[in-house]
Length: 465
Image (cartoon, rainbow, N blue to C red; front, side, top):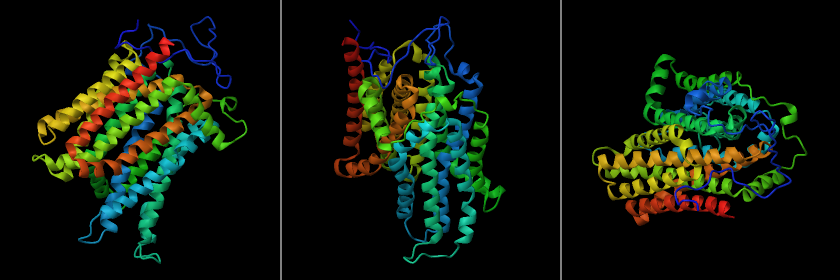
């Protein structure tokens, strides 16, 4: 009998699907003919061994600069709004809401569609071009503001502000293509046994970029503006995108024209195929549900952080970014733990431990929401165990998804996660005003443990059947 805390590994036997054949034919050298290698216990699977792979090093290095640019970009746009368009004595909330909407809409509109196109395009081309285009767009902002200075549209809105919204929309749109291409590229350049370490390193980088964006974004923009007056901020962000694109030119994914999915193009049928695959592959579907719920909790905490900072006497409400930086640091620690110990137990076990830990620390945060020290411990603990949820579940999806539907599945994942990150931004604040901070955080705690148990239960049922 399978022990309660020892569910199976994610590579479970599934009914045969003629549209997604699994060709597991050994060639006698410990390799599988479908391009994936078997797991060998002697193969080093830590982050150092992953970084010794030159193609992954190129992909990861490009991600470093791309993620930094992503996180500072919104800080840049809001800084431009506050200095160029906000009137004295006027609240900035309306301006910021418009920026956030223009940044979020592409994620909802194009998240799934982008994945379909990525299946048909060379991943390296997508990665390089999306960064180059974003860099050029950001570098064009000073020219836009100069050309539209004192210009007003017929309905009274500043022309420069609407141009800035268009640039924000386009930058976010190119990001929707970059994300599924990046996820697909990882599986092309990293051996299957090393995927967990690779994802851990990626998550650590994302969390470090979040910390950098929240804590150091404004000082870095100020320094760059001092060095290059009037254009320094755009040079910092746009230059980071361009540098990421240049680094990714060195990437070799090994793709050929024959590898690309170039049959007849039917957009909605392709999206439907991705959905049908997820329906067929129960462990991937449950992993996606776990990712959606975990990111929803993270997004809700992003909103509630402002209220938490307000009720903690030691800090001011505008210093909520410090709390988010602590949560990001916790996730980075969680990623390091997964990279070090992740291969000693199954993906679902890690996820269940992560969900249980999140639930405990969220409950602690609800009880001690007005205590600065204990609150920080609870926030950091929530971040650590969130890392134990996100990384194994992302690895499950990567390990199980066939190459011909990776773009579709990762596009659907990107779309679902973006909605999960966006919806709580409006719901959490309303719920807090009606039910109170403590009850909302307790509700998040319940969601964490329920989704963890659901993911583990599905994996257990598949093994028993």
